[in-house]
Image 1 (cartoon, protein in one colour):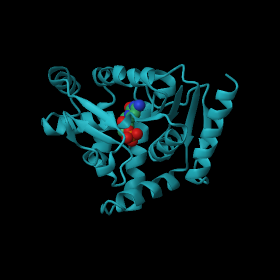
Image 2 (image 1 turned 180 degrees about the horizontal axis):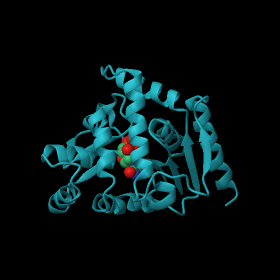
Image 3 (image 1 turned 45 degrees about the vertical axis):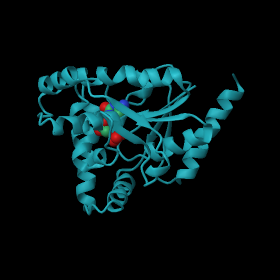
Length: 230
Ligand code: DC
């Protein structure tokens, strides 16, 4: 079974998807982590992320090996998933504001999106998944049985992201968080290639005034109803 969850920055996709997957016994797949890893890889190799040819050439030449998995018992430190780049744990390195912005830049390129596409689809054929990102319901898993579009007011999303950054010792003003989110959302929605867009057959959930538990409960209920009717 495939559950696709899309939405803008800090709508709660990660936390909600992870908990719903756990409750259902499905695999949680954070596709944003893949684009973030490509961004970190570019920085390490000193490649300009605004230069499409350089980024795509780098990926094609070195074919970085990216692994996503559930954290093991020695990795319980608040992360939602463990991400390895060529065997090295970069689970926290990909969560900085620079990697957020960088991932949005490199996600505009066809060569990058296609490099990551097979990996995403393969996971969804081997496992039942809760996969979250921007183009999951519209492009990666068009036949997903349940498609959710998570939305939320900018103030609520920004506050959430600020708390998350503060818990990691990063003190950023709310104004800066709001402007970073708006810039990234605009970039993700306005890019020509597989932009963030609500799938016509998706169910929209506005998370602004809901608790995490309420959102997870709603998704799990939708899945169970669907399974009952199969
Ligand atoms: O979900 P996230 O914030 O970790 O995603 C990081 C960036 O990756 C996001 O700004 C756009 C890009 N992305 C994408 O283009 N398609 C996806 N399916 C997931 C993420």
